[in-house]
Structure formats: structure tokens, C-alpha cells
Length: 156
Image 1 (tube, one colour):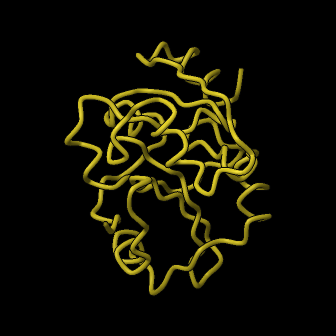
Image 2 (cartoon, rainbow, N blue to C red):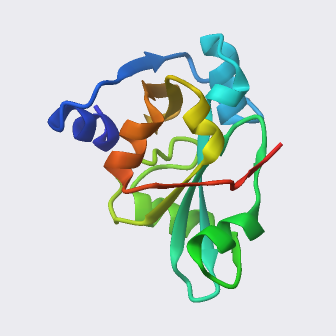
């Protein structure tokens, strides 16, 4: 179990766990998950961390098929600018390894922003906290248990 799955189990949130054999040579963890689980890349979301001009870390959840719009994230967070966080800072703050960072069950409570497109699916898939492990849940359940805000932060 991972902290993400422990959290979902503890709060009795509806979710389904999906696992696949992770290939260490995969160029994109998120696209690998979509491919191996036979899912549309628009329904699989990656968890990225950004840093503001004041050093605050923000969590961004966007479709694996696209990228994070840092200006849109900064606007949503009401900060001047955001840039991708240092990988080691991301790992320290979340307690997860890169490629397996889940928006759920992180060590520190970071402000979380979820791309609006997540609301167009009955369920979405996010990392369950380990490479090769995804959790399927509704965007509403994700927002509730991350105190997440929906915003147009993804770019195709």
C-alpha cells in the first residue's frame, strides 16, 4: 500500500486500483500508464510540482497527453509566476519518487490545482504513489481529498 491508497481506504472513498508492469525505459510514465492500461491519454492525469516566486510549492494535476501551462497555474494560484519545481524538492515535499508522485497522501499539504478537463470524465486515473500503480476515482473525490481547485491549467 502507498500513502495515497491508505488515505482513500481510511476515508472510504470510492476508487479502483490498477497496476501494470512498469518499464524503466519508458519515456513518459503517464503515457506508459495510459498505453498499458488501454486508456485514453486525456483520462490519465500526471501530478507535477511547480514553485512560485516566493518558493511555495504547488501541485498541478493535468492530462498526460498535454502539458502544464505555468502562466495559467500562476493565475489560478494568484501568484506572479510559477516554474517547475526542483525534482528533489518535489520528492521531499510529497514523500514520493518522481514518476510515482500521487496528488493524494502527500507528506505536506500543498495547494493543489486540477485541470478543468478532469470534470468531463466519470472517472480519471492518477498515480497511486508508485510507478506502475494507478488509482481510478472521480475528479470530485480527488478534489475533496486534496482540497484541490479546478482551473484551466492544462495545455494540449
